[in-house]
Length: 438
Ligand code: XUL
Ligand code: CO
Image (cartoon, rainbow, N blue to C red; front, top):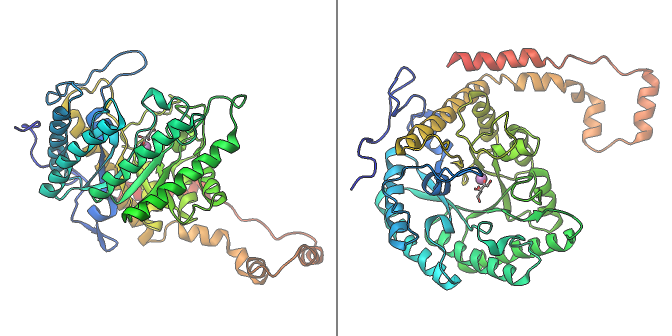
């Protein structure tokens, strides 16, 4: 029985369409820079918000109407929900999905029971993947919801909780591998501290690094070749999360000799919580060869927490796509780690939300590609650094200069040459021109 009988496969109808259940910009087969939109964007539906989100907030309980869900924690309900999820992915035309172990299957009384539950749901996921051709972008383990993880998982002060977390990741890796997952994500749910009085930060970070090394070893042992990803976030749930931003993650990975095995999964709302733009985080990761995947969402300018809204802002998506086109994102993708508002409680709202996000990214892709075709920004950047192209700049960049020589050079001149304008306002107008064009 269909869970969404009123919806058929969402089609591309073009920008003039006013059909709310059609794409206006996402045309999966359209080729841009030699690749289809489908392959550029690698859209992914996240299981946790879309199929486990209840709409609860700190002030009130769930609001979502999900007629297919009997509200129980049974494996049969989880299996049925998985089939509904695939009907949704299929009708939306999303080529990928992503999950936490505990989103897809209920936690049991023991780890062995939880593992058996996960296997039973993974049987359905495998069959649905086979039936539809939809693939798993990434799997991950939820090591933050259960009370045992109140001090964290890989950074906990309780060594037996650490062992539990290791066993949970071992299983999540096996299931991700079984389902052909192309990546495996670590988001440090409670890997951080609430205060430094009771925290041995060095010891916790050593434990975290040891945990990651064990994960790398186990992946090798079972033949999992997917990309490991760390997802930075500065705070929430803890006051300070160790993976606070791209720079902190890369420093950690470098310090503990893990850089070869990990890239980053950059999320918009996490970037803004860290006091950065999404473009900054993407560029910072990309320039170091560590841009792995993105969690696509957006925060709210007036609210200071992780609101995980669907992205609809063309400036944002154009900026993101400029960086993704520059560095590439595969085997990562564009994962909608976003939830419908508590007030948008009907199943149909899940379609409107994803259609809007996919269209916003498709349009961002077109804008970014048009700008790249004209080298619209490159021209400004090249002109801005042109003083470096002369003999002086070339010798500094080649590491052939020292302070004595630079002093001699500038003493002889008396004063540095004139600066040129940064042209920010003109550049912003140019960007607007590309937004107007399409
Ligand atoms: C939390 C968050 C997570 C990760 C996966 O803020 O983004 O859902 O994406 O654990
Ligand atoms: Co996320």
